[in-house]
Image (cartoon, rainbow, N blue to C red; front, side, top):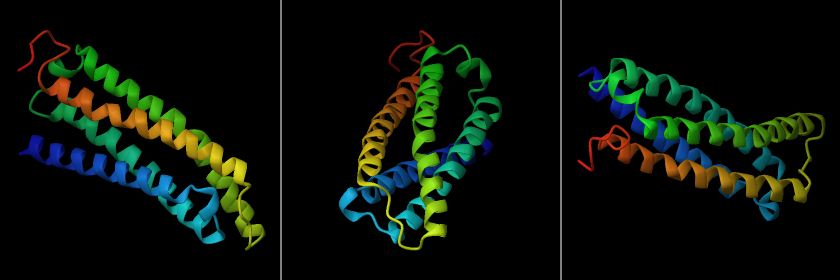
Length: 155
């Protein structure tokens, strides 16, 4: 039962991360930027951070307490590729998070603050890269679940 609860929770968090990234991308448009949008971006980015921490905790709980256990995951190069892709997503998210925090601060000082359009455009492109790398992760998970990376075949 523990494995089932961890798996369901893991999948729901992944869907949550995908939803937050999609919402941030939808909001991060130069033509749509407003003080209200800056506030929303701050909320979504905070949710993204919380979900990222949660997925790490639940993911590693699955490794140690799930049905397959660490002997399945730790020697699997596809598992480490998946973890690496997640790390790349995390690294890509640092700059947008720092800019959104700076925008939040500027908004507190000036209620009509709107970020410079070139910054918004730059962050939007970065979010697109982040989303594309994130989209690789379910593929790695599907490969891993079938034993690929351990020499177990295509299951």
